[in-house]
Image (tube, rainbow over all chains, first blue to last red; front, side, top):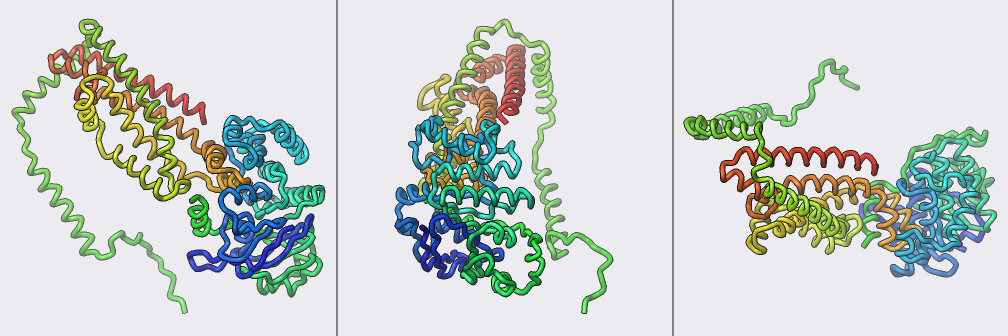
Length: 278
Length: 266
C-alpha cells in the first residue's frame, strides 16, 4: 500500500509543482492521474520513486518512508517500484532482452550485470514476461528496431521484471496511436489485476482514464481537485480540473485532444538531473 | 487598431546603429591593409628559395627507397609502435577522466579535477610536450610514446565527456529508476549510447597519432620523423620524398580502414 502525505515540491525556479498532496493507494488499485500540462502529474510520479526529490511531505510504500532514505536505501526501495515512461525510455542500442533484464540491476552485482550473467531465474522470468507481452520472437533485436507499441511492451516487461510492489506509469500512451494506446492501457491494467499490483498512471486522455482506471485523481496547479470513481467525474468536475470547456464530446466516447506534452519541463528536468547524481 | 500590413521586409542587421556598423566594416578593411603593408617580404630570398623548393619537389618525383632503407624501416617500425601503444594507453586512461569530466554524471569536485587534467593536456601542443619528454627521458621513441599518450588523453577525454553530456537522459533515468547503482547506470544507460562514437574517435585518434609521430620525431622523439629530419638536413631530398610518400600511403590506408570500421560499428 502506498501512502502519500502532504507532499510538496518547489523548484528552484519558484514554481510550486505540488502543494500538499495526500492520498492512499491500496493493493491492486489502478489510479489514473489527470490534469492539464504543468499541473504536477509527472512531478508527483517522480517524487514517489524520488527521481525528483520532494521539498516536504512523506511517501510511504508498505511502511518504508521513501523521502528519508539514504542512497543505498533509496536504491533498494526503487527496486520495488517499476516505472513505465512516456517515450519508452528503452536503451536504444541494447537488445530487447538486455532492456528487460535491466529491471534486475538492483538485485545483481555490478560484475554479474557487466558480463550479462544474470541468474537463471531472472532470465526465465524475462522470457516469460516477453511471452506475456507478446514479444517472444524479438528477444535479440535492438530496442531501436521495434515499433512504438512494441517498445512500450518492452518497457512494461522491464518494469514487471523488477517484481514491483507498485507501478509508476508516466503518460504511457502519449506517443502512440489511439488503437495501440488502448492495447497498451489494457495490457497494463491486466497485468496489475493478475498480480494485485497497484499502479499510478498519469494520462492526458480522459476517456482512456475513465475506461481503464478504478479511480481517478485530478490535479490542478499542484493540488488534488478531484479524487473518486471514474463515474463521478462529471462535466463540472472536469471544469474544475481543466477549466471551462464543452465536455459533451468526452461522454460520447470520443478522444480528447492529445496534447504533445512532455513530462517535466526542460528546466525542471535539468535541475533534478543535477541533483540526482551527486 | 492595427497598422496597415507592411509590404517590404529586410532582415534586421546584426548591429542596429548604421554609423557603428559601417565604421566597423571600414575599420576592419583599414586594419587589414595596414597589417599587410607591414609584412616585409625579401623577394630575392624567395627566388633563391624557390629553386631549393623545386629540388625538394623533384626529390618527391624520384623517391629513393633503397639507399637509406634500413633507417626508413626502423623509423616506420618505431612510429607505428609508438602510434598503436600510445593510442591504446591514451584511450584507456581517457575513459575514467572523460566520465569524471561529464557534468551530468560527476560531482563538482571530480568534474573540476578532470576538466583541469583535460585543459593541461590540451593547452600544450605536441611538439612542446615532446621537447619536455625528450629532455626528461632522452632521445627516442619512449619520449614520443609518452607525448602522444598525453595528447590523446586530452583529446579523447574531452570529446567523450561532451558526448556523455549529450546523451538521451531518459534512458539513463529509466535505468536509475530500477534501483541500479552508479556503475550499472554507466554500463547500461550510458555506455551503449556513447560506444559507437568512442570507437570512431579512437580510430580517428590512431590516425592523428601516426601523423603526429612524424612531426615530433623532428624534435628527437624517435620514429619516422627523426629519419625524415636526418634526410632533410643531409639534403637527401630523394629519401625525404620516399618517406613522405610512405606517410601519405599509410595515412590513406588508415583513413580507408577506419571509415569502414566506423560504418561497421554503427
